[in-house]
Amino acid sequence: MTAWRDVEQADQEFARRVRIVSFPEAATPADLRVQVRAIQEEAWPSESVSDAPVDAPTHDPALQPLSMVLVDEGVVLAALDILFKEIVHVGQRFSVGGLSTVVTRKQVRGRGYGRRLVTAAREEMIARGLDLGLFTCDRPLQAFYESAGWRVLPGAVLIGGTPQAPFPSDQPGFDKVTMADFFSAAGRQAQASFHHSRIELYPGQIDKLW
Image (cartoon, rainbow, N blue to C red; front, side, top):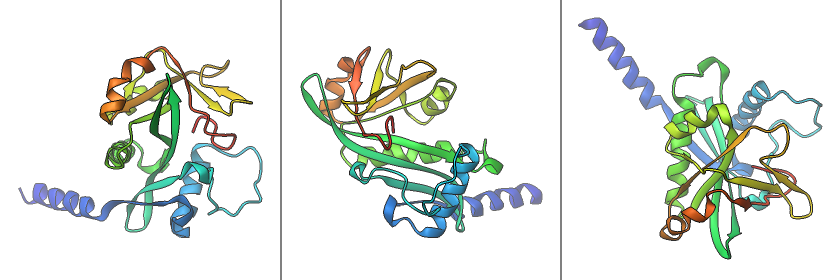
């Protein structure tokens, strides 16, 4: 009984230590940004050396990037960014948020930290009054995002990049699915129109499919 109580108390203490903090990307404390960049590099090694500082922002500021970080006493366990813009779809304007650079520290993967953060990001989009959340992921990650409250948009393709240089999610070599959730009354009413459609996201050349 004592051992069980010790484990329970340890779990409760850890739950109190671990917290989610969020900042506009450019205002993220440098020590956290350096850790996030290191975890991103671990997940997606760069093919070339960049001259940019390791704590420099990585997203187009026009997309109002919001960094969300899961930390344990200053140690980053998982991180992601939410990007925002308005899109026009079937003649209607919608406020949209999308997930970008979702990553968990390699040593602690499989413990639910990424799911906790992705769930919190969805709640953040709802709290901001967005019409919907919308992003793509590699097909093997579909179940992970579904476990955090997101749903597949059947047959939907995101068109990233710009109108002059489109970057579609169904281009050769990609195996992507489009994930979404509809938050506002206007978003839910238009939900069916997003199925089996080509959605003109156009977040620009920096983030492309965000």
